[in-house]
Length: 422
Image (tube, rainbow, N blue to C red; front, side):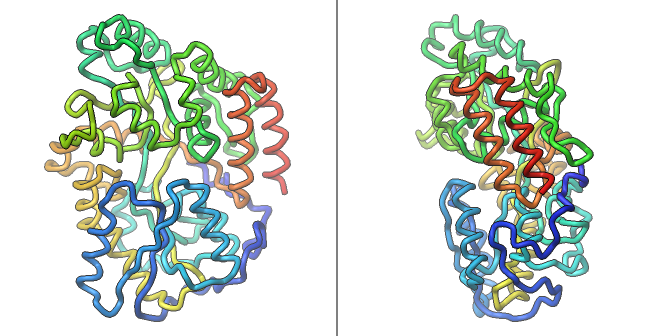
């Protein structure tokens, strides 16, 4: 993971995106009730976690402010709140790629590392996502690595192995689709709607072909043969119908539902899907029939985009001391283990991946840890929203055949160069 991706051209006091002028003080003072701004809880377990805090802190209760399911809409609402200097949100549940933007605009406060003594027990790559210019602004509570979910029952019947390369995945699809019970199934889907998930899937395709979106020098580098190979792989998937046409509208949940309904042989998604797809209450048609593997790549195992969520303290909230304690509570080993057990979301505590009970319950932990360890971050730039939007536009135009892949990447290189040098 390259720290050099951080855009140093913008000063920490930038009003990029209409930033506020909140305090950057590390003095975390003020106690009392707080609010927690977070995306829609698709896991169903957040209430249990917050209830555990509220039971122990009756005078400092947390109220959940649930934002939309879409990451882009979450970010927009958080920014709008910060620009108005509102104290409506106390703790923010940030996507790992938002740290630089929120820190540079002083929408969140710097966190004193000595108040978070367990940071060295977390996966180092996750801690890095909470830093901007080597200072801590957010604490990682969940991580994420992309996984390849697949129908183990059908691969076994067809005599196929979990694929390590894109060609192997295509070959396995052909074998399985020849089975009577696989009639009408599509080969593969990820997240291809024009939103943050498309940035992730595009980045993984490029990285898995040996390319980069932004290089170690902090400069964009997408007009390359490697990036072209990655984007072309996705485009050809839509052209050949290996990726169903409906997948152009898929975000995480649409894809998950399609996989659970038995419409997909392979599906790229995050760890949270494991618990939901394995439910035996009738909501999943594939419970007990699927497994997970690392993402495939061009010539071998692919590269995941590093995901996850970090908790940060709004610069405009009054009760920052309570907010800090709530973050410590939610990021603790005990709370993270309880969350894994209920949701299958990836923890940031390294030791939990070695927990015998969890390994028995969640066989995906080994490939997930490998996915996170080898994952690459999205560009850590202050203008991340604009950068991500440009990536989404270019990739979407190519996937919908509005632009040839080569031209889409050439145009994207030009656009990113203007955004990342400003």
